[in-house]
Structures are given as C-alpha cells and as structure tokens.
Length: 121
Image 1 (spheres, rainbow, N blue to C red):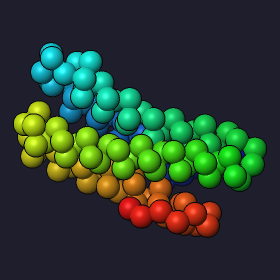
Image 2: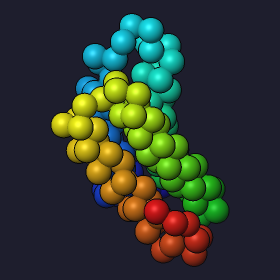
Image 3: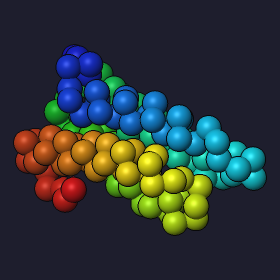
Image 4: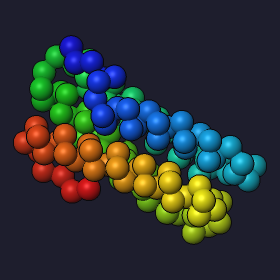
C-alpha cells in the first residue's frame, strides 16, 4: 500500500480542498446547494481519489484513481473560472486558488505521465 501523505499531488489536493471550503464560505445563500456545493465536492474528490488509489493493490487500479483525480482537478479549474466570471469570487481569492488548482492538475498529469498514461495539464 502506498502512503498518500508522501505524494506531492495529495499534499496539494488537500490544501486545495481546504482553500475551496474557505473561498466558498461567503457565496450567496442561493448557491449553497449549487456551485458552492459542486466546488466543494469536486475539491474533496481530488484528494479522496488519490487516497483511494493509494490503497489499491494493483498499479492499474492506482492509475485509474489518479486519472479520476486529474479529471476532477480539470473540472475544478473550469468551475473556478465560472464562479469568478459570475462575480462570486474576487480576484484576490480567485487567483491564488486557481493557481493551486493549476499546480495540482499539473502534478497529477506528471504522475500519470510517469505511470505511462498521457494527460495534458
């Protein structure tokens, strides 16, 4: 079993999940079950899939969960762009969390590449 806490991808994803919760705390009440919830689920999904993949026995299973985490990271990048354009996030919050999402996706893409799977960050 792999130790997820030693992976840079997990460390970034964990930090990203915390930041997503922080920046969505002040979203409009009307978005509590909409975009705020979606952003939070997506942010947690990245780290959760890394953890679950690390617990799998085979390299193929591990790679599949890392691939799902990468997909969630890409989804989150879009959602962050959307909420910024909708005015739910100010640039002061949007830029740092978007940069963290970009770095997380890039590290996951690198991990997938190392495993022989092609992805683009």
